[in-house]
Image (tube, rainbow, N blue to C red; front, side, top):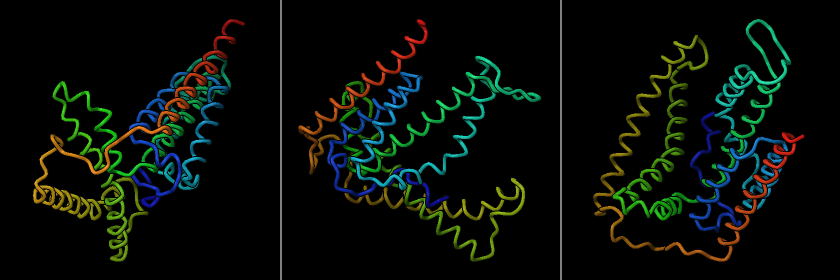
Length: 274
């Protein structure tokens, strides 16, 4: 399970998506995530599916690598689906047993919510797969730059997000090493009830926290030794500049949002009228 977590990891490849400006990927990802909540019909989800498949194909990130990142959130996905399935009481009753009731509206909401969550995770993961941490920091700082006028520490926020994303795979690797070391010493993480399993995680969490604090302290000392003082007056080795492919990406994503809203809402309106 530890090796299946791909959040924050960068997948190197030579694709158009990798070469896009990080500002474009941030804004387009945000537009795509917002668009998933602007419709609730089968044609709308079909359009979103086709668009997502095309982006995955263009990015040259293996689909198996993307799906592997969904394994850690399967439990959260199942809980969300079950809550929507049994707690939404709309439409005709399809199944009823004891306190469990499944209605037509509950089933539809559960399916739509599951698809929406999967697309949310895949869409946001594609941004991190195709963007290096340094590019992501520059993109976040550039997008949030107008907030500097109201004294929001944009550079510090972008730096913290970048460091957090970069530390995720490092800490996961460290957790895997600690678990293997404890297993070699005879530790058992599988047997027992929930309390016993939680207690068996203590030999993992304690050295993991110690290692995380040590790495954070080493990073802080390294930044101080290099006289790091924030983003004011700092120059960039690779300044961000829009190119023709970036404007084309904006046009394509905006056209997708308009199309998916028009198709999704149009079908709903047509059904409501008739």
